[in-house]
Image 1 (spheres, one colour):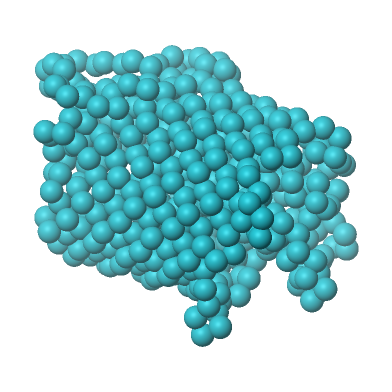
Image 2 (image 1 turned 90 degrees about the vertical axis):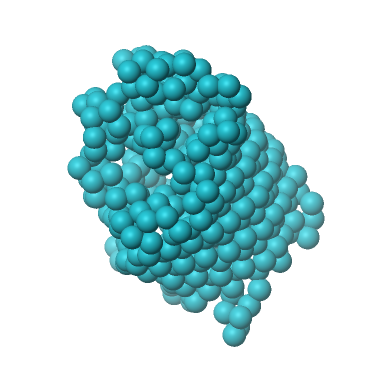
Length: 438
């Protein structure tokens, strides 16, 4: 369900919960627990890039009241069962490479994420959001397992004016970067979800059936995806643009389409270091040795997405493509010679979800197909495919049980992609896990 549809359901749900005494106010009207609100804001699979807009809509509807603090908690964890036909070559879209083992099978219990979130509303115009989290899927040594994932403030009042400002550390409003399965990111999300490290400034306008936004960011390496060739650049050295339109089709059916642009990214050079610390030290871990010939050219991203939602089923598609070929797969790392047949970096995700009841429990059945083109088609780093099937049982408002099967074709990790990629690897992952919240 998209955020606009979710908000309408959330307003109804909020009133029902209040009647049943499930909306808690431990300190009268100041401190609250409102699980439907914080569930959407902490979702790791959907509603990734629209949080500032969602907060404004929640304020406008009264779901988040003025001068309150709303606290939320969440955890997503699962047991992973993995197999591969080539020892040590495991898929990397759900977990990081060093966690997989060196054999042809592996299993492990993983806490994907656990944390706390808070919404503070001050008067009618100011809303702040913060999220601290613990994760076992981080770059050990370069990223802390406990970190402030997001902290930003939104200035706006949709009852008065559709414009707003958001400032802080947050996801960049670029693309959708979503997936219907409960645990594993789509290829689009894994490759292109941009998350700020240093604060960014988002400026937008929300109409009745449309919205636009622009984000100004500094040039340094973001926590995810964003980075300019001028890493010392101030706010505005990098930027993103987005336009979105909603079509109400009646009977609780809706179509949403969006188009986005991100000006510069980590895909602008041929040194495939995965963290800011690795880039600065120019050595492992999380980085190969520097290429003999360093090449850098500004490389942006374009994204288009569409999602149809209805009471019974949802359908979505997202396509993201770089503005030029990925430098790291266009030139030989050792000689600097350009490969023949270079192609832009791209990803396509197509997904569907059927909503039903199993033993009277609300249940989602989902399928997500993702693929990416990375380099020339006659190389080991040409493309990768991911097929995901899942079932998610919504046991109650606080607990979901998920079962997921992921089939992968190709092993092409970002770090040292030319040195270790093998295109014909076949690997599988089975996941059984839970998502809990309050």
